[in-house]
Image (cartoon, rainbow, N blue to C red; front, side):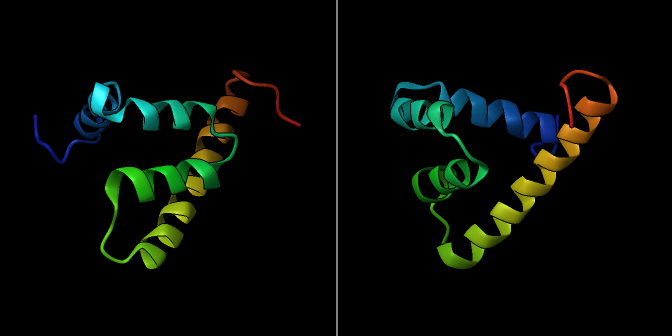
Length: 83
């Protein structure tokens, strides 16, 4: 499988987060209560980009878009109750 494959990337990140080295960050992600908080944890504790301010804004937008898309799919399939 190609390392550019989305599923491969998700599995790799999941494996890293499950390791002892990242256990405190994984716990912080699990108890985070907002997209903004989760993105900040990833941005400033896991990825640590060269230009955090620019990267953080774009990652937050991307995360919000993905969340909205996933919620729409779940609503359309009656997986979650949507108002």
